Image (cartoon, rainbow, N blue to C red; front, side, top):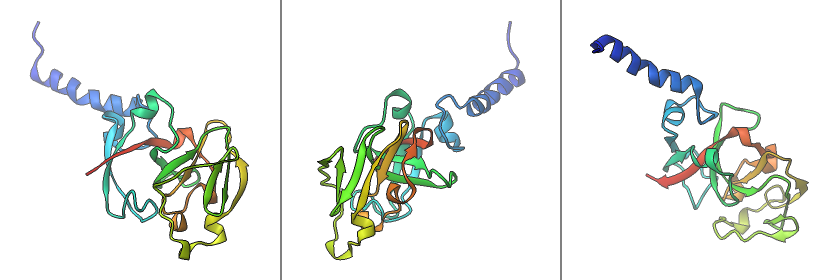
Length: 176
């Protein structure tokens, strides 16, 4: 039996729509590239990740890693803001669920141990207590603590708290 052109065309057209609606990767984004392919380009909108990523850089966001494995400390993560879910951010994951995180003198402490962060942009002349000090807090289960590499100019988990796992879009990848 031979299928005609229009039934075949209709079926092939409907398939991506069905996949988009099902959202098999459970990506918290309406971007069809992320829902269908699991990857999409992303424009860095600010300097909060300097020197690693600069304002205007283009990266690839890969949704697959966090559907197959758990996020790791040091990952660059694209996610939805915990309260303003239409806003996407890219930050570095520094704290995992159940850990205690604090900032003292600009150094991040995880469970009382100083975290080695060679990627952080430290401009001592721009430091303020708001950017270098944070009382210890415990990260709830299923949530992650995110910080920008340019700590003096980053709006991150210090201000709005940890990010739920459901808000993670994907790992930031290669610069374009």
